Image 1 (cartoon, one colour):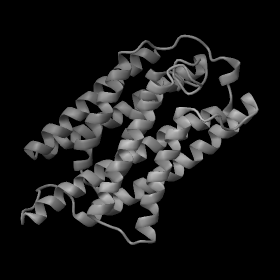
Image 2 (image 1 turned 180 degrees about the vertical axis):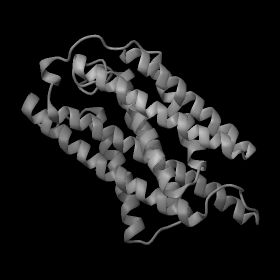
Image 3 (image 1 turned 90 degrees about the vertical axis):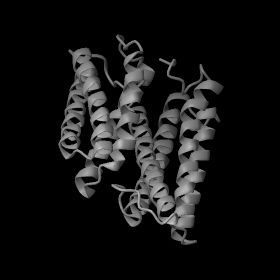
Image 4 (image 1 turned 60 degrees about the horizontal axis):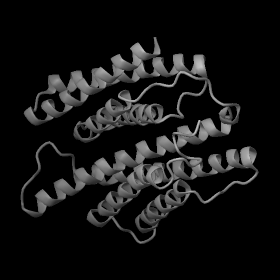
Length: 270
């Protein structure tokens, strides 16, 4: 049952990404409306798959397949909240295909069929992983909003208007909100991870690549928070800093696996 729900949710996610792209490019409101329904259905189905997996084997987000699914699910959920609040579909054009691609990659990996090791059955670890990928989802939305801002701002400098892109103020505010939320979530992830490490190994910090790179991401977004609130940066410079921050997020996720493929933060660790 979990596998069936997961597969159906993955199909709906891919359909939603396609409808967002074609609906926005052709300016068809009907397709955009169905894209929302498909994405909502995907969120519900994946939630059912996760619940079933959790009841059977325990916390379901410790393999690469599972964390990619978690990231895509949180990204979809957060995006639906944003679209419901603001009503702009352009972020769906940028975000949903990315989430669909992520979950499609995850679906190619073998699912886990074994219960968790006792060491991994900790509420602190569960909180750490969940909050960490919620931060990733928030940073992705911040990047999408910053990218939309830069496209619109570039068009305006050329005395054009990038049609169907939201106003600059909306994208600037959404990027700031999402980046700040991601920063707070990342800090919470580091704290919960340290609490679990203290209980599991007697030390809260072991200076693994993932930890060091996470601090780099916090530093970039901390700089963004500072210049937005104290140096009064806004607009183009702030948007480019969000883009740089998203690069650091990708490096944190991918680079850590390459630098320490069998470390404590590797998804091979079970």
